[in-house]
Image 1: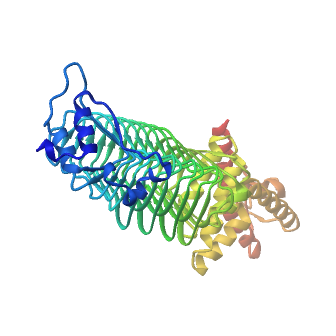
Image 2: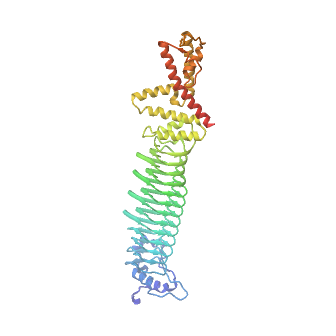
Image 3: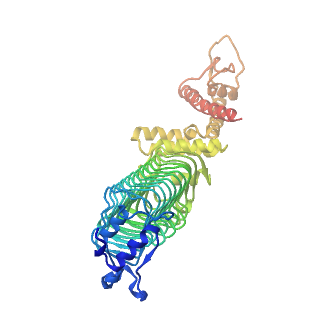
Length: 539
């Protein structure tokens, strides 16, 4: 480069480079220091991009004992800052600068890069490796920020960054690798899609207070994202458009506390097959206008929906299909508008609140070890009967087993009796008729005391009948003593003999009565025996 062609501000930068001295071209008039007003800056603040390229590419040797660097503030950079495939060993630090054209850093090897409070019509850093931090704090970037395939060994700081590319990619960071934290907070906004599929973050991913806007599509596309520590989408986080975390992994906890997601009529949060090593908090004011899905997710700790508000009237508002979690805290601020699908989820503890149960549930295949609160069988039956699929046997069996494990055997039997009654409503007329008799007589076997009451009643009935109408003796040469009570009891007992039934034979209608007592005794006696066996086995 011909040094005679350098303008005064360029010459200042050239001379300051070997020792890394900062060059500040800001105006004394502070109203002109906003990069948004760069069109009004005079030639005393203009630096050609080719000068920056020459310095960064090694046109000037560092001063011995000093760290060379480009440190420039308040400049308007004209032309194309093209460092594609370059090896840059010195830091680049630009503050409050305005670019006429998008810088190109694709596949470059850079030292630390700071572009703070700058205005850029785009930034292309695909495949770039930054040995240090990429610091974009407070900058405004239109036309898209491309970091796909990039590798940053330090921090990626996008705090307060404003990205704008409506209808396109505001941030394209597919397969991005950041060894430390990623900050998208302190007023970070994006108008357009924010893409992080397959990205890897070695520290924390912080979207605290961020505002994402892409209402016609995906606001945050982060499928297969891998976060080594915690993920924060809280502190006033809002997203218009889908937030997609399908297949992502979080090594710590994931917070959506107080977040507001909006994608009405569509999916607001897709976290299917998500893996979180501790807890997920969609709580304390979390709001979703659109479906929320954690289908197939695995949560080592708690999945909390305490104080949440979920709305998706057309269909499933909350999908927890096949979720595996230590604890599900399903206590929203108000009943979920839409279906809550818990089918085939596996939970150790399910904590809910009858006051905020969804009006529509899907519970088939749901497995849990404990319920809090346990509630009575009658109250929990109201919960089961909210299932939109109608009668399914497994939810009843699971609930009964849970009550039995808690020592609440009567509640467990009540659930199984309700299961038999609800199943009857799905059967044809012949089976319904048999079911009615089973219910009235023995409570489908879950009311053994009812069977005992019938036995006592039949015993009294038979004693009266056969006292008035003594049956004939089978052997005329034998004259046994007849006792109507023990004869009736002998008929009713399904096993054993008291010596009365084999000696006497009623005739006519009384033979039918005796046969009825034998059949009733067989059914009712076995029912009582089964109930006694269950009681003894529990002891």
